[in-house]
Length: 192
Image 1 (cartoon, rainbow, N blue to C red):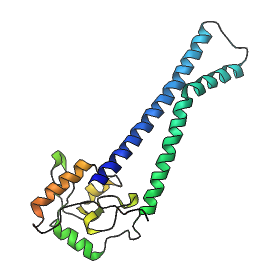
Image 2: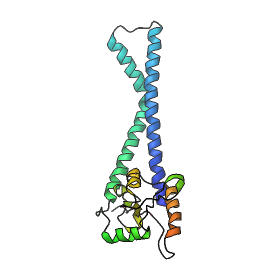
Image 3: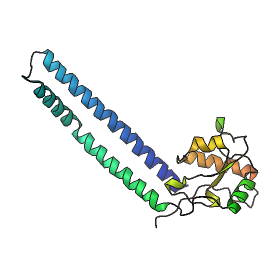
Image 4: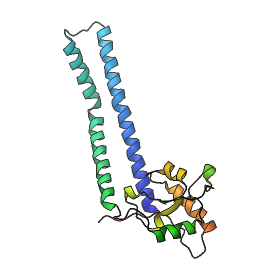
């Protein structure tokens, strides 16, 4: 659970930082253009069109230099994380028949994913889904198996579920899993 929280919030923070930097760079470019337009309106005209573009480019470059460096750093961090996810991938992508049988029996043939108002989906399960996505290093094990209907499986895709979603699924499982059965969900392979 602790590992999923760290992974989830690290990726959310990276997305937020990248979005903020993108907005910052565009704002810097627009403000530089507006400042350049103000200089032209005030009567300070360069002699040639190339001088206008050179001055505008210099203004954008100066305004976005630090944010550009931060964007490059964030891109490098994202690439490293993705490369580590690829190294973690389970060599077996599909659940075995035995795992599917046990996982579907544990869920009583009903989808285990969330529907509206954080309740359990009422549709019949058709798929075995990796709770922690296989593409992000999730293992192909019974602990990472979640019975899902086709709609919920498509909606989730390869997203990493939030720690709150994991807690709610484990809480719901306590209602339909036998006392001796495991209710924990999600498993990620360690780096080789």
